[in-house]
Image (cartoon, rainbow, N blue to C red; front, top):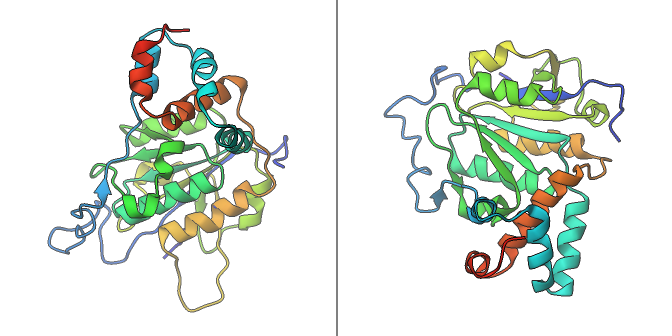
Length: 272
């Protein structure tokens, strides 16, 4: 049973696959009647989606630079300083792919960890059911990260490999230690379903393996705990690395999140 957070320019980029398969649940996910949907049925669970204001702004003719010029003056000095401070540390060189996440608490915890560590993009492959997160756990962190959904494992693999990611599986006998992730320029952590693990197509894409050293009797960690351990290592020592276009897009989106009634303001102002 396996468990599941300055790069060196010459090293390959890396996508880290974690298989957290439970021994009593098959590869197709949780079995009916096992009462595994209690948290998913909670009023606290919600489907995190992108706030449409930025897409609507683009449809109205706004550019990201124009949005920044229009909305930045509406912030207080303290809010502007804090927003720019966080933006400076944002990372595209570390990302996550959640494969068929089931428990909203786990999904929410991963989103919150990513936001806290400066990871801007979280990829999701909702193979079995829609992606839900717990509001109590996210604490609004979903507003500050980009959540990208994929329709198939093949689409997710292509999206991760386009920027030269290499898939690395988490395994008790893995040749890599978590600290090795710091030296890899671009890392994507692929987390398997809590009950069924990663799907076969993703598993076949693994190129290397990494282990989480353990000294106790347990053989695995909760998926969100494992993600935090590995992502903390993967992000350590990295400077913010958004491209100018990425920085403008993220900055504009955050301004629309920060300014009250930004949707109404968009309608009233002339696009820039």
